[in-house]
Image (cartoon, one colour):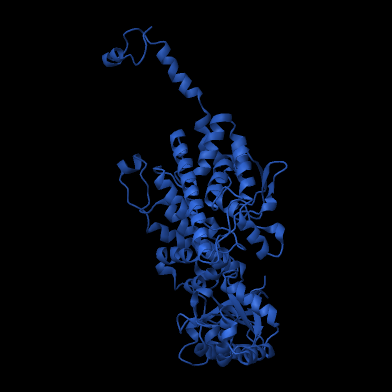
Length: 528
């Protein structure tokens, strides 16, 4: 799916584009045919796209199928505008901008004269007023023939043109790259968590934001880590207290996020290299394994069943209510026992141990119903490992039933290649995959009265049950798709019954009367 339109964008032309976007999306009949045709003809004269393609791209963008819509400048190569849906709203027959000073983002792509790599830099936020200045700046840069020059927002202010010599001396800062290319990349990957990733860096590294991104190295981050250390007494050291003022998981998240930002800068040619992968790894306290007791498992399934029945009853009531009033009713769910994706997703996660991110990115082609295997593709696995996970009866039956749900028919209609239909499509946009079930999970776990149990602990529950039944750590490692057996050793204590048997032999050899008086009276241990 293309996400770009190549055309000439000027201040007047931009207003016409918004007018046309609104007409196509909301109510074309409210525009006079002559007026609509006039706008369309003007845009087509200055673009390389036909009417049908234009309509399809705009509709997909507005429905959330594209993270952003790119308007490429025909008369200035490398210059483009990205329009994000969340910066607009529906207003009558047109699209309105929520913030007049921020319609989108402007980018300039050029080849670095030093290493011949293509570099994309964010010039700044886009509005028709600021775009004129940016356009003049880029033209001046192109005329100067300095291909290694980088252009940034702080050089395009006050309606003045930028001197090429001033721009040449500039260096992209961490904050500029973070709010530009890094945010755009994360919006493509997962729009729901993109802003959170940016906030992690801004919250933890406020003093580094104005530093050039090429100067973010291991030494800088080691100094930052020094500021997060506690001064421990010898008693605290002997007690193995944490040396950090923050949780190791918080520090790990901060380091990993800023490292991914710098790594993206390397991949896009903004910097040549970095040494952040030389930083020491944080040791996490992974020894506590939480899995469900039999009573908790019963409460979990009881709560999921009650939720599912409640959803099905509500759907039937809604359909009847709307049919009585001659309104469009939602589809019937008679063919499928599941009201939505929540119950089948939780069951499949619990019974296979496959990571949630892998399940969300899986497709129906990954399920082999004949051989009863689930294929994990290398391209979607966290560790980039391909694997085949067998399906037990519950997982197999769940997938068979989930396949009957009407959302899969809707998903197939929206995508070009029907075999690539998502295993768990998004309810809001079936052409895209599911991204989270956190809200539903929090409600279920609360109603089931299960405490201190995270969603990811279902994976630990799967591993723990397999370990306790088989005692085969290598089998568990394979099923969890671990790259190293060391990662799986956290479950090793679950298979070691020999320790319990050893200490229980002490009771068998105990002399008569060699017990505390209260235990003898209560008959806790027989003396026969």
